[in-house]
Image (cartoon, rainbow, N blue to C red):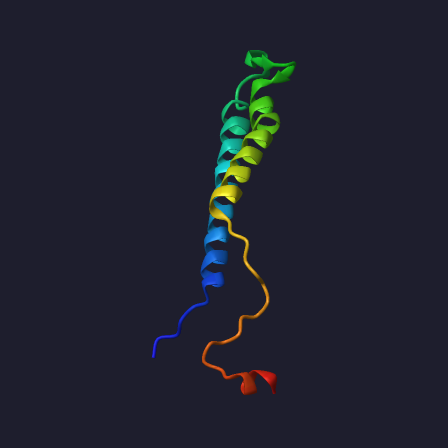
Length: 98
């Protein structure tokens, strides 16, 4: 007999995987801009709004970008679901009321 997994667990696992991928994307963004652009001589830095470009893109611009990305992911892929226990369909009313 095959045990059926609750659909809520599948959805929760999917949402957790999406969140981990989004975090990974943000970390890569931050790392590439922070260490990729900031790994040069400070005399050669370019500046955006008075900040070094590596800092601006990794720390200041990255936050709104990931916030918008997360908003889109939550609206598109996350679902609202009840967290209380569902009644098993195979149980009769007498068994449930005991």
